[in-house]
Image (cartoon, rainbow, N blue to C red):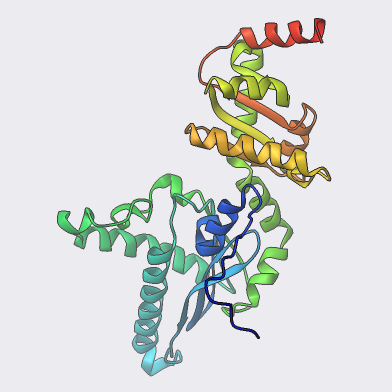
Length: 299
């Protein structure tokens, strides 16, 4: 390897949109929208799942006394310490502002036992936190350690053969889990698409699709929610990809919401039927349709 020459200057060119991918690389947890706990008595892994990787955030490995007639209480105390440790790790690492689904997997009834223990543990910890400490808790992490009713709906209990990390693979291969994850990940997208189609019927001047119409709305900073199919970013044409990356960045700069639809999900298929590019506007813009028609009449 050669050392760089003195006073050498280097220029690094990054493709448009690369900043977002760089941010993801620096903090992959920002893209982790699924949390998972795989466990058996004495062993648990608390993981965060991104589209590209599994991040182990905590490993709990504890010796639990065997359950014997004369030592039942020791066994129960060991289980309680173990569940306390897993609960503490879970609350430390799971951000419900990002997480859309939580998988709790074990053999037998340990998963149900842990779920019940987690809720009680979170409630008990919340009561211990005074007002000064509450103000220091990061936004998004279980507020005051409480798990709300809405957050409880994100949990799914399922089977795993063990608490080792590799058991997560069999959990994710379960058809029921796969369906739940697909629907959960697309939840915001499905809701936005339903809103879009509803507006097309009730307030058509706030719902437009097609790159041309959407760009016209964007120039007026009118886009509240941008809906795009991920297939647009896989186009063979580099100019097309850059065009949509620029659109995404512009909408975000104007504090608009950007939703990327998976073409593998039914919501993405529906969006693709209307060009794969649509927008819900902050306010009506009837002139968009008129200008588009005028352009077609006078090319």
